[in-house]
Image (cartoon, rainbow, N blue to C red):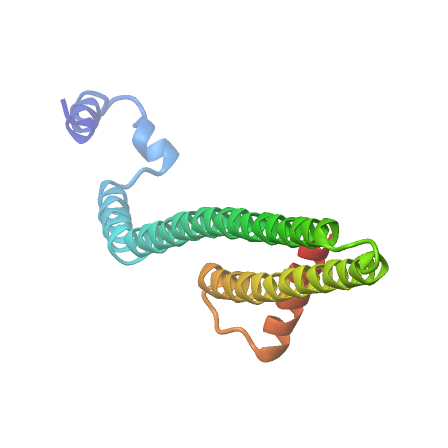
Length: 182
């Protein structure tokens, strides 16, 4: 049953007693106009406010998920780079050790008279091998720092969604370099 129907029936029956609706000042047309106004406002809010806000929130969720995915990719690339760097350094150490062993074998083959000279030459070869290994290690570390800095700057730019200034890039590069050095 409709509320207005009940109220109309009560009004017709209660002509002898004071009408409750009149006592509280209820107006059927005012109530109906408020219901219509509320429905229009609710429709407009749903169409022009609620859905655009949901779209913005969904876009943010998508960007955050993309940023997390990129961060995972960068961590994987960093792990691979560190692994390959460790392999190259280990290879350089093996080669240096092989050079040292070659120098020692050559020194053993030298006669007594040339023994002192062979020992000096072996020391020079060892030093050169160490210097070559250290130079290679420094070169690889510099390359690793450069690649890592580039990856960090690219990822930061993608995650934040803005173009980084050269000062921002330098700051991020310096932080990444300090972390690698530690």
